[in-house]
Image (spheres, rainbow, N blue to C red):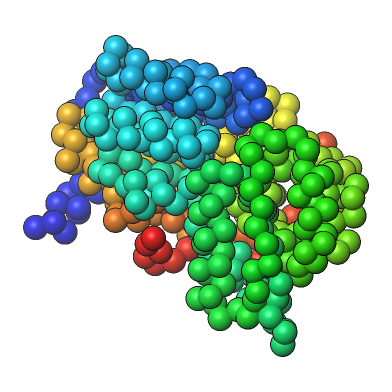
Amino acid sequence: MRALLILLLMACPALAQSAPVKVGCLFPLSGSGGLYGRDSTVAIDMAVDWLATQEGYPELQVDVQDSRSKTLRSLQIARRFVEEDSVDFLCGVVSSSVALTVSEYARKSQTFFIGTDHASPTLVGAARHPWYFRVNNDARQSMRAGAKYIAEHYKRGAPLRVAFIGPDYDYGYQSWDDIRRFLDEEGVAYTPVSAYWPKLFDTDYSLYINALMQDAPDILVNAHWGLDLVAFVRQADQLGLFQNMQFMNFDAGGNYEILADLGEDMPEGLILSARHHVNWPDTRHNAQFVKEFYARTGRYPSYAAAGAWSGMIAIATAVRQAGGTRDTAALRLALKHLQLKLPEDPEGFSSRMDPTSHQMLQVQAIGRTLPNPDFAPATMMLGDISVYPPPDIWPAD
């Protein structure tokens, strides 16, 4: 019976909904994370415009509010969206700590929340609930791919000395737990030598950098993102850290906005990955996405733009398959079994939702920073790419 229901759902019934689907998005539009919100807004407009040209999809009415990356403010915005504006979906959120609060409110208010940016595994693990779905890659997939990369490229006799530095909140803690878990699963011989936890949005990392140089690891796994990562890389390069250990950031380090912000200050030879790459995969879909974003803004998209695009396409596809928003059971079933062809998908692969965790499973590409003048103001892009498919089943906590 369940299989039959899924087949009927995927047959895309005639859309029974005439009123627009109301979506309330929370993004930082100002402050240190403002670029991610502004890029997300552009990508939302791109998706809405594209959907308007496609037959059978619902109209999306999207309201984006500035969360300023503040938890209480985000909760207030979410409540206003639901209790005053009667939105059908909440979406967005950059910080995982903010997302945990918004997700709990979504559970209590029984409102679908489509995560498009944040990456802590807790949201699809211990804090998972029937109303939350995430369409962007998350840190657990990144750390799993990172462990495979280390196992593949760093075979040696003596145990590797591995250090970690990441932000002092759930995203950082989970990243350190996960990289060790997957290194163990890959059979990598290693010794964890140290772990450091600067506060989110810290500005001076010199004490941590000096301590790491004293620790002398073979590999430093970093879990910073955004301007925190930019500041860390600049300071680490000035203090000579990259000459003494291999730097790796498997989740957000290769995001285009990092490469662009650092420009000529980005060192060669760092091992990085991203949730979206402007130069990979070399597909028509990704090229069109990047080209249109550039045409609208005069700059290349951050990973957050790809996540926001995915969120809008996911919502529209699920509503289309469920025949509207009234039947929440049908809508949930559609979301649980989503399969979407997204800009970050290589040929022959489509992103798919894991029905148990509600986490989108995606391919991970890890590369090394190499000189590349094609995407200014970045002077380095990722090359020498290694590609890792997602697991068949989401790795549980």
